[in-house]
Image 1: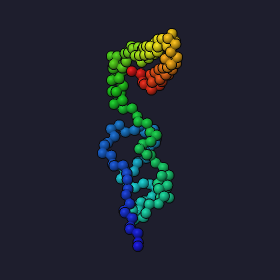
Image 2: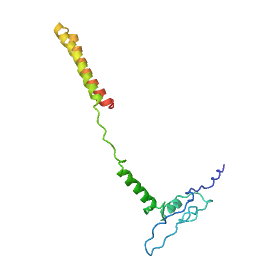
Image 3: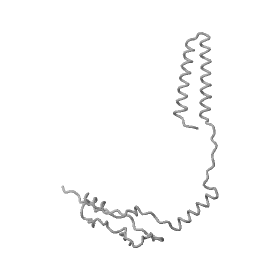
Length: 166
């Protein structure tokens, strides 16, 4: 069974510009400007034949053709707009519109909450451990000491490694 014919070749290119340059680029003395081909013209690497299939060697040849790509490497010359913008920025800076006021740093609520919970929780279980030691209840004493370690480790982990500053 014969293969289906390939679809026609597609050409992608930039659309033609619809504006005129008001301030032409400054030419060095004695230099002549090299005209750029219009946007709709075929690439200078050779004429493209839509009846031929796409060939990698043709794509390489097109890629190696010298020429400007979107005016690469050419800096734009300053024009009237640049002068107007510079004057506007100078007036705004003189009026103080570009200064950012210092924001006072508030104390960290996370640090406050950490110490309140750490001291409160450990004080509660320290009291229970003291009560278990005084009454001879070893289970209460050991459980209270384990709770102190567990609360200290888990509270430190959650407050400083899991949560963000609030």
